[in-house]
Length: 285
Ligand SMILES: [Zn+2]
View: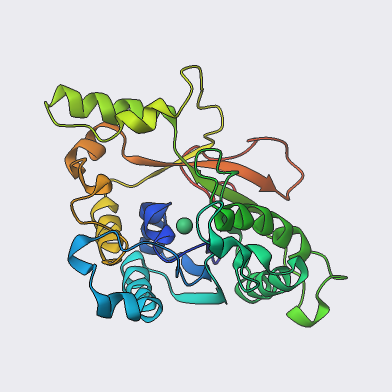
């Protein structure tokens, strides 16, 4: 079977911070990986002090597109589909109200674009987003909603007949953070007398939260370093001294060399996680 993976993301840089090691893992295995980016990330702040310059701010959209190209090449994506919608901005910001904001695009229009990509790429596995309980960005919530609807619409011959022959995607997953991962990394940092950036994240997760939503853990020990390079390629979005890079790679590889995914939908008639491989998104297909 020719394996194909389609990852749907909201903004340039999301592809390098969510499931990035996993995409490299599959690309290394010869899986064809395709990236969809819904917006241009125009509302994202310049988070790297070294890049906070007027000429960068004036050309932000073009610069972010170049950063995305670099990151996508590191991650092993074969192609990028840019849907071209405008970044809707953080919750309750003015950008939410612009008619060209992704969050305000008519559902039929955005769905038609995604269905067309799915029917062209014909992936067995899609990566979308979960319901983002801890980060309710309107564009991320829209990806969560549309990816599921697009999966079903793409398989329905009566919908969007102009977008190509129907295609049934087997599985839709979303990258998630497990409590286990945060606790293990935090404790490993503390045990090494390193300052852990994870304390404030742990505070946001209820003590009694379990990890029953984690269905597949993909190994990323051999891809973590490249995933971090991809994130660094987003020079305007990512502070090279920031949160993501404070946990040494060897700590991650020692205590939690996985990226966690939850299964959002499957179309093979099986229930729950029946027949899933605990370490492979394509397992059993
Ligand atoms: Zn985002």
